[in-house]
Each structure stands twice: as C-alpha cells, then as structure tokens.
Image (cartoon, rainbow, N blue to C red):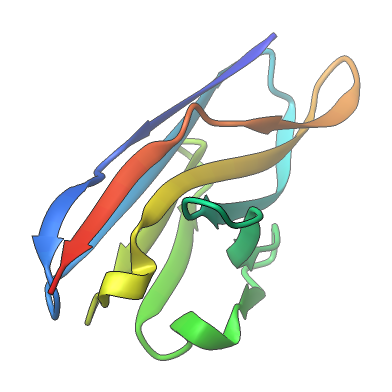
Length: 118
C-alpha cells in the first residue's frame, strides 16, 4: 500500500505565492510520472502540471510561467511552486503519482485547499 501526504495549501492574497508538497511512502519500488490536479467548485478536475521520471514537465496553459513543478526522487516527493496567484487558481489541489511496486498503478493525495483572495 502507498500513502500520499499533501501539505502547503492555505489562504493567500492575489499576487502571492504558495508551495505545495506531496510525499509518497509505503511499498514503493519506483515512482514514475507525478502530477498535480485541481478542482474548483462546480468544475471538473483538471491537470495543472506533470513531471516525468526524467524531469520533463508539462503545464496547463493557464499556469505556464507562474507555476513550477519539481520532484525529489530521493524523498519520493513532488512539489508545486505557485507564484503570482490569481483568484481563479482557487481550488482543491490533488497530487497524483504513478507507483511501481507490487503492481503499477496511480494514487491520489487527499487534497489541499488553496484559496486566493482578490
């Protein structure tokens, strides 16, 4: 079994910054792709950013130039640095991690709320 623990959400004013973390633990041989999704009230969950094992990144157009995803393979952790936050970034943010263990499957974090006030 694998557990994902997210941290770093909170309330911030527009223009501010937050850094989200997601640490994986448990029966892990290797972590493959890692990513962050978000879900705003009344909207579908959407991909924010993703990073491959080799460090190739992909971002939603709405966050390009403002958010940076990174990973620390030694710590089994993925980060999302969010700068120049806007009210429309308000959502619950979820990490998603593909784990190679006894099986190969993805896991979701519990979600961390980000609220950006105008």
